[in-house]
Image 1 (cartoon, rainbow, N blue to C red):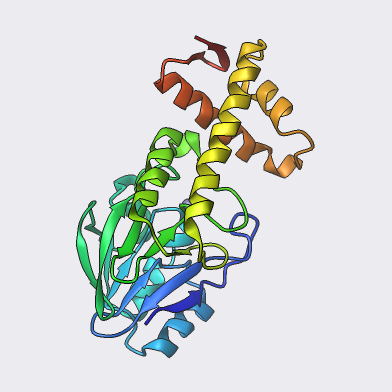
Image 2 (cartoon, rainbow, N blue to C red):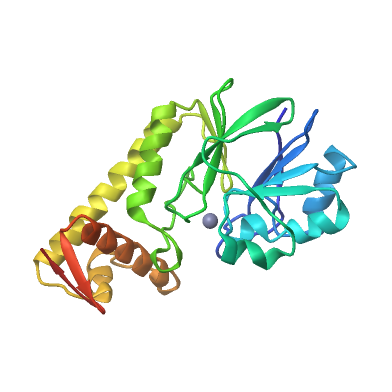
Length: 261
Ligand SMILES: [Zn+2]
């Protein structure tokens, strides 16, 4: 059984807010900690008054991890696990056990396999239920929008594309993301994400070939009519593409000056 629990944290960076997933049963596991909103904790308690015995966090972005302290305060016996990102993990006042790629964890009445899916963040994991072909997919993809690759804070487009391709090879039947609705037809969505990044890359390369040298100039050309509030994300995305091209020997950056190779 999977109980979808809202973290009650709508906002400019989380949209309608985060979904967390509670698997009651023999090994009660909560996937993602939310941010400690009382409504979220109460919803967990309604599913099981003793709370989860184990909280697994998909990655250390605050909308997924910041509730760890509040969960520990309410249910002190809870264990916390994630793929470690020590600098970030240390901010939340609980101790973390390491979950590495391929680890098998008991969750609810079944087992989940840890799939390390870096790119959106270095520590991002998804959790795979091979029996039902369901993937708890964190911030890997969302049904409605694209996912930010924060290149200045641990994001990597090269790693992200590898993660998308790896998840495609699992042939999942369903994704349960941390934002937006369940994804019942994930293969075309994953393919669209890869295609979208490829199209962006073509645009970035052609901007470089046309002599545009700065991230701002490239953003201005590619993201026409973008709301000013979204500019920082567009800059992160262009930088992520430039760094990928640099990894591949196709571009070179010095300071904020970029050129094609
Ligand atoms: Zn995130």
